[in-house]
Image: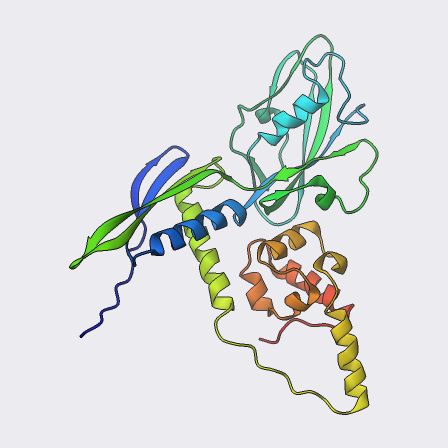
Length: 314
């Protein structure tokens, strides 16, 4: 009996309207529709990079529970409105945006002074309303990251007095759903068709979100192909002591390496939790991860060297 391998189709566009897209993948083996659909949904929700406000400083405001004379909204309401602004950050470095408004009326996201690396996709987003002789001076830090990160993680060091740290939702995805139905392939009627719906916040196209999630899955699976080769155990005492020291160093947690928050977030998103796991990666493998570039690899190498470890050789 001849056995023919049937490969799934490339994604097909069913519809694309505004921030929402529906796509189909045909000819999946029975059961593979849910396997692929659930995996892609989890990757889309957790592993696509985005930008968000992480710190805010408002002139004359000591904390988030304060109020501002002449401003209708409380500081807490202003912060919530800032979280609704959808940013695109070009590059890996964090950026600072500013706002100085003295006129009476509505303040929206379009009133921000932006560096060239920052773009706002919903400039009509309401920030606050001013009345009388009120003046609002505000600075916000925009960072790049993955998923949801609490402000405790983002601010490992104490923030300056008057600076308000925020929880950050970096994901550019609003909603992801999928469904699976049977289809005919040859004489069989139990093959799967995967239909996936993606809605974004406008900082990334739905089609691009699907493409990036597929690439992320491929990179992750490619990294685990094959088995590790066991290294020979040295017999002399000097090498033994060195190995023992390195073994102790590999117990160091990722958070203790002193890396920047952005790099730690990217590595943890890729499943790397310790110095040992990091040392098993090569520089080229790290660069394939979202949010890791040449500068990040240099920072990682220096951090590992402090514990007597190095990245895996190419």
